[in-house]
Image (cartoon, rainbow, N blue to C red; front, side, top):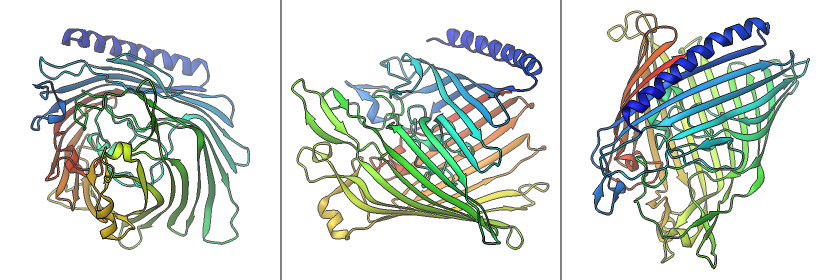
Length: 489
C-alpha cells in the first residue's frame, strides 16, 4: 500500500472517529448516560536505526531498511444494562503499511489465529473484537463476575513480566513488549482470551486485615503467543525452517487459576496459582504424519507465586514491591538430541524467579523545580534449581540459547512532568548480567486534551546476539526511533 492510499485511509479514519465521537454524545444524552463511548485514532511509526538484521536475509537479499507504519482505530463502547450489570467491548481496526527496501517480500502483519479470536484480516489489515465481556456485581458488593474475552493483569513489574502470566502476548507488532512505551506496560500487547473470572469477598475477623478477596479463573481454550511471521521485520529467527507444514495441537481447557489477595495495614499481598500452557514458544514434536505434517504439543506449567507491595508514605515516602514465581516443571529444550531441540522435546526443570522493587517520587530541583521525579529500581533474578554440572551436561537451552543456573537483571526508570503535565519525559534502562542491556528514552506531548504525541528511541546492546528471548541481547537488531500521534476521546 503506497503513501497516498495510507493518507486517504488515515483521513477517512479521522473523519469516522470525529463523527462517531459527535454522534456518541447524542446517544449518551438520548440514553440518559447508559451508553458511553471512549477510544482513539492512532498512527505509529517505527524507524529502524540498527545494523542489518541477518535473520531477514532471504536468498541473498538483505531486506533490513525498514520503517513501520501502523494506523489504527479503537472504539470502547460500554453499556450499563442495570445498576449491577454492564457490558464492555473494545473494537480495533488496524492497517499496517510496513516496508523495508525494494526487495521486500510480502509478509503477514497480523498472524494471530486461534479459536474465538473474533477477527477478519489479510496481510495488511485487521478488524477485531479485541475484548467483549459482561460484568455483574451483587447488591451486597461481595461477589463480582466477569464473563467473556478479557485481560487479567497480575503483578506490577516495569517493562518485564513476572506474575503477569495469564494472557499470552501479541509480539507480531513490536516483537517484544519493551518497544511499547513502558509506562503502558502490556496494555496493547496482551492477547485477550475467553475466560470466566469470579471474585468473592471474604470476611475478616482480624482488625488490620481487610479487602480480602478470592479470585478464580477458568479458561476454556488454549491461546499461544502470537509471534512475528517469517519475513516480518521483527522476526528473530533466521528465515528458514525444516520445510514441514506444522499442525499445532492446540488443546482445549485445563487452564485455571486462583488468587487470594488482601491488605494488612499498609501491606497489599496476593497468593497466586495458575495451571497453564507455557508461553515461551517451546513445543514438543509428537510425530510427523504420512503427509509430512509436524504435530506439535505445548507443555503445561504449574506456576506458584506471591506479590507484596508496601506503601511507606509516612516515613521513607517509597513503595516497596516483591514478586516471586516458582515453576516446578518449567520446560526447556534439551540440546542432546542430534536432530536439535525440536525433535529432542522439552525437559522440565524447577525454576524460581523473583523481583525486588522500590518506587519513590523525589524532588530533584535541577531536573524539575516544580514537580517530583518518580524513580523506580528493580532487582530481578532467575534460578534454575539444578546442579551446574548437570545443567551443562544436559545442554539445556531456551529458544536456542544456553541457560545459566542464575541470571540477574537490574532496571531503573524515571519520569516526570512539565507545563502542567503537558510534557512528560520518561526513561527506562535494563541491564542483564549476560553483558546486554536495553534503553528507552521517550517523551509524551499532550498538545490538547485530545491530541497526544509520543517520541522515543529504543536501543539494545549485547555480546550474545543469538541469546534467549529473556536476554535483551537477542534483540540486538531491533534499535528504532518510534513516533506516535493519538487522538483520544
